[in-house]
Length: 382
Image (tube, helix red, strand yellow):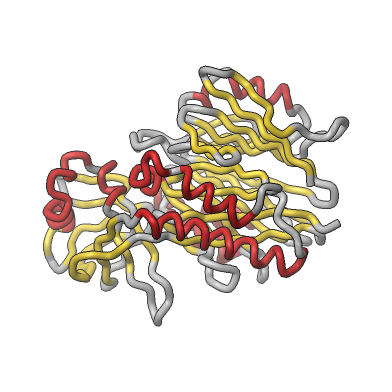
């Protein structure tokens, strides 16, 4: 596997950081960038640069290139496989109710023969991520991994975009199927937030829309906790996510607000908040957030190292926009933590998201997460 990474910024234009060997053409190109840039002329330049590659990517709440975290940039990561191949499928949704069926459609369109892993990029606002993951896993062959993320739009929560098949669109979900006996893929996901306040029961909800906690207006109760931060909803809600208690001792998942509705006093989350479940408010712990990124990388590389005894060639990092807002000027510390685990030889790419898809570890089930760092590592055996 050979990798080339290019970065575009307004001040410096294009900069090629890691060129492919002479004569090699990439099979796959990831492109992550600001919403406005994905609709501009830069995409035409990318397609001209890589005419034979499959190009896919999404809008973000921040781009990751090597050890940097950027805003309003465009990052392309071109991959030339030596022994593997990739196939793609895509579909569109009108709203969250289409999510489960969309997941089934995406996996069904990929050949199961030789399938090693599926990586998904989804619209970040029109999808119920929990139902999307359920649909994907319901059709996924046994032993095939699943990771990915929901696209972002900074802290604006206006519109998110997916680029695939030569065009860019809202409401799109695309899946990459990775094939090859020599391909090794690892993955891990961790958070690092602290819970506070009492645990409360979800007494009224519908899918990913929460109406009541302990028979009280969930939005009113949430605003009490936020205090002066309530005026900045929904963006300020990224600083105070909800922890959803797991079943039967399983690790709980975190849910982040996507929208609020003052009319019916509801809050919309990236994934389900089922009635009868228990939630607690969470707040940031800077050191634990960075440790969580390191832990995710360790989980991702453990599976690869057991099979290959070498560091991965590429790591795709999908981290939550909430972590970026909390860590602020310290945000690159979590990327540095991943780098310290994976080593200098691994190329790093990725984005800040509205939701992360993956298992906590290789032995856990795949779920939609919020407020985590999710790492997917790839390499090929010789």
